[in-house]
Image (cartoon, rainbow, N blue to C red; front, side, top):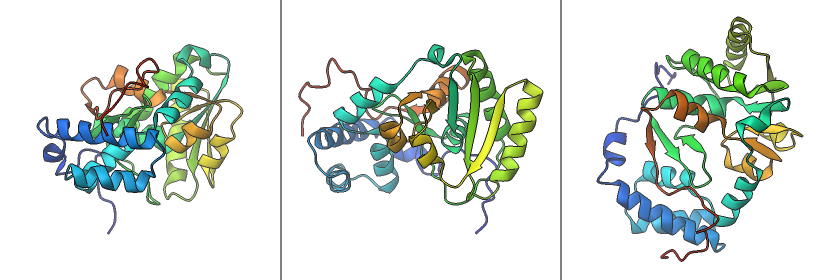
Length: 252
């Protein structure tokens, strides 16, 4: 069935699945999952254990899983995070769809997850096709306004070549960059994750696998949402990692 969405907003059931009454259960599940992952338990079996324990449906389990990582992973990611001021004069490579869809979701009223590692993530995932929605152009405009004051020496956006409509999105981005005076370059590559993981520069992403592999990263999507989408529906299943209390006991 073709994708006919005009917005990247909430799932029809999200109001019920992430209601204020449900959040304490999600937070308990996230805390338990973090405890298990921090002690070396397998992610899939740990998620099933806590999901069953707290009677979470699939979408709630996805939210918990995307919000949580081990203490060690969160600490390692925090050590590599740089401030926006550190981008000045440096090359900045952007995980295009990862950053863009999170901000689109925030603008459309979709669920945005405030994760343990400090990133903001949306609930969506790419499945071979990108559809321009009502929030695409506003999101790109916001990202241009957020990136420009960072004054990167070079800003390279990477989009997945196998994802349909990537070429069209690149053309739109190049036109907007020209009008906005932003020194953007947009490239289509077969596997942006592989390129970004080995990038010798600062990376803008919230992808957990990339955060574990990259050298340095900046929290671009979170900064954009916090400064330009203050009414976004941000759900915090677990408090942001803090090294000072990372070792305190958490119930299993």
